[in-house]
Amino acid sequence: MNISGKTKVVGIFGYPIAHSLSPLLHNAAFEKLKMDFVYLPFLIKPPELKRAVQGIKALNLIGINVTVPHKQAIIPFLDELSPEASLIGAVNTVHHCQGKLIGYNTDGAGFIESLSQEGGFDPRGKRVLLLGAGGAASAITFSLVEKKVSELFIANRTFKKAQELVDRLKKTASSSCYLAPLKLGELSGTNLLPKIDLLINATSLGMFPEDPPPLSPHWLLSSLFYYDVVYNRRTQLLKAAADKQIRYLDGQEMLIHQAALSFNIWTNQKAPLRKMRRVIQEKGG
Ligand SMILES: NC(=O)c1ccc[n+]([C@@H]2O[C@H](COP(=O)([O-])OP(=O)(O)OC[C@H]3O[C@@H](n4cnc5c(N)ncnc54)[C@H](OP(=O)(O)O)[C@@H]3O)[C@@H](O)[C@H]2O)c1
Image (tube, rainbow, N blue to C red; front, side, top):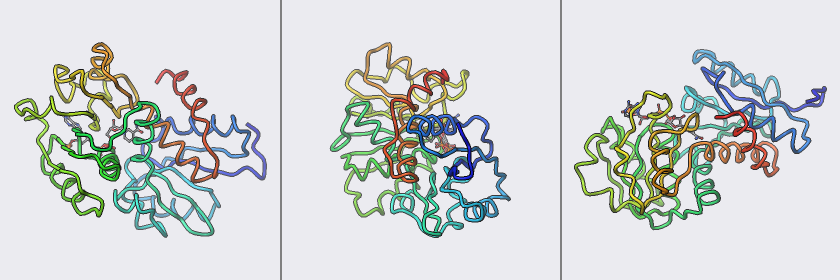
């Protein structure tokens, strides 16, 4: 990497940030395409967020990614939001363009693109059960509704959060699908699972080796497609899906595709997906 006076700077704001794979992904992409860009991690404590966002303009950065815990908190400091970011209520990408800071959310679209391009699964008209109601769940469910799934069940440990997400989804103009909140712990008592086409783990369960699965592997039926958004390890459910030869994808694909969409926003160039996938695999994540 040759940094010169002309090198353009992008980066990521988060707290913590040391674990982030985004610098690896983007710098590999810039290197592959011989682009004079560099991607840096910025450790930004919550009380410093406003000043850090002002710094994007002051330092003439091209843009940034935004991760935990700033995805919602950053919104009041931006000049404009894309329709997706506005609907989802969270931003993971900022573009500094013509003096303005524009917020985007590429998590949901990254999920959908990976599902169709890498998984060969078209969500239109499908019945979906999504576990979780946090940030990832929110981005994914708005994109699934936009893609016209027919039924979307959202099961969360804290039922109230599932209910609130369903209420927000119902307000979207394109929401013609059947939406229902559920309590995660009560799923096995229902007869829902045999009817599901796509099962998604969007909880953080599985990030640590001692985590129990959010649902018994018994419920991984051969008729469904399983998507686990956890990207730092193969979760118990993912391993069970592989053992049962069920179609599945892991969170690395969503990570790569959301990064590729951010890359495109900043550079107007198509990201080298294969190169990005290779560096993640080499990292052993
Ligand atoms: N692949 C990607 O590109 C990508 C992008 C974003 C996030 N992610 C991953 O998605 C996962 C969720 O991230 P997030 O940002 O949505 O986090 P978040 O906003 O903190 O939400 C966490 C979710 O997990 C649930 N949960 C946490 N601990 C649980 C437990 N012990 N039992 C049952 N449910 C539990 C929470 O339920 P409650 O509401 O009951 O607390 C909530 O629904 C993480 O693994 C993250 O790394 C992946």
